Image (cartoon, rainbow, N blue to C red; front, top):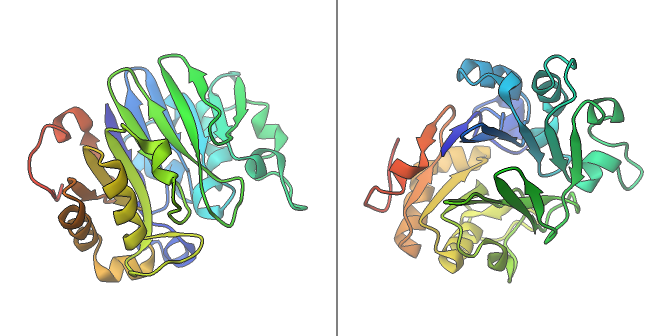
Length: 266
């Protein structure tokens, strides 16, 4: 299995400045190519990384915030061969797909109808696909229908927190994951009510004890503090191997999980 990061930035100011790109990430396993949270630049970044977006098979969007969904229509048009083929899977939050609180859906029905299957992600309601399952997880975020995901493949389980602060019991969703991808927007050792800080990430990693923790979705304060420093602090506090993702980083998980040491700079 391979992870490809098409952007490791998050939040309004990283998005606006593109100090880190905001294209989301890919999970690749055999013929399955999943694109997760395609924010601004996702389509262009995919081509720049030599990852043909027309070969995307599944699109997962955690919630209807700009840095997570805005390139979804472009990815859908690529995934459907320029709208010629009724194919692919779209999974997203209720606000994204149906709208909420007076808002229109983030992805129009026009694009939703291009794909072969559309699913609303709801915490705890497992979704079955050809070759893998996905468990949506609860978040505590401003976009209240936001969900994380646990991707369950036969030999590997990858968890993704999406946005939102740590809450007691969050770890129950991620038990037994091999790899945990965390959106740690800031280094501050205090709580931001709707986003995950370094302290939050430490709590979750320590409770779950994955084989590998990967942090991403860095705001400007995280970039000033140093993502690698954040990963090192998580590793030192929890004893779990931790990596700070970088834009266009490609990771063979079978090889990475076999490495020793608490931190790695790829």
